[in-house]
Amino acid sequence: MALDGLAVPVVTIFGESGEVDLGQNARFTRALCDAKVDHIFVLGTTGEFPLVTSTERAGLVESVIESLGWHTDAWVGCGAPATPQAVANATAAEEAGAAALVVVPPYYLSPTEASIKRYYRAIKAAVGIPVLAYNIPAHVGYALSPSLVHELGREKCLAGIKDTSGSLDSVQGFLHEAPNDFVVLPGDDALVASAIAAGAPGAVMGSANVVPRLALELVASARQGDRARVEELQTALRALLVALEAGPYPAVIKYLAHRLRGSDVGYREPYGPLTADERARVDAALVPAEPLLRPYL
Image 1 (cartoon, rainbow, N blue to C red):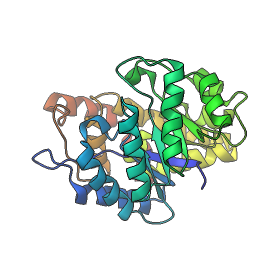
Image 2: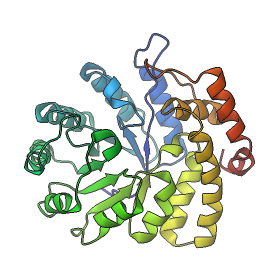
Image 3: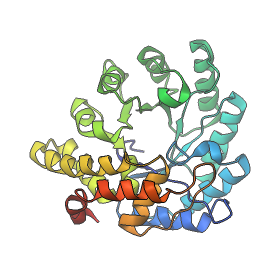
Image 4: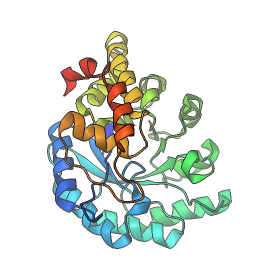
């Protein structure tokens, strides 16, 4: 199975009472498949995975996988503070039909490197599908090191890493002297073109929830080395990112998916919808972006 191209870290849609809305999540997934994205990444950071209970996870993952179309597959976020919990998430995801797992390291407390290795080895020992590490130090509280990740890659424990550090240097650090067939995917939309030019085979792009065709074309053009087209696409992406940064995350992604694509969305407290003032700021930031985005909507 290829771990390249565009992966979309999908939002999780909640109903009016805050419940996980399986039908709306399935429809959101199907729309992205219709846009021909390569991978749906469910229960990542954009999917607000800490808000979803273990009981809810099963139904959500199953509904997303059942709704897949085109040639799109599903990656599932499985990280947890405790190894048994992460292993349980991983085995359930594989049984549901996940094609790969994206696993944030233990968070909140600060584990040693030895304990992080045991954590990833335990997960991989429990499943037969690829496992990607997830480096997101702003939320986990520490960064994974290239040496640790590459060691696990050489063991075939890890197939790759999603790096959402906000740093091209970090992406390049994971690419430098990486094991054969080890995949490094940027998770910061602004770094996608540079990371692919440096050797990444694809990207994980939150903005694809809003304008999937723009993200798809950017990844494809960057992989083809079409610099002129990449710059044109990046101009539109940068304008969109200004709007995405004008409101609180993750509500702003849901708001813009509804605003630009008509997607039905829903929220779970404490991460509710944008306030009137927040919507006004986002709408104002969106004005210069809309003409650039229109060809991809």
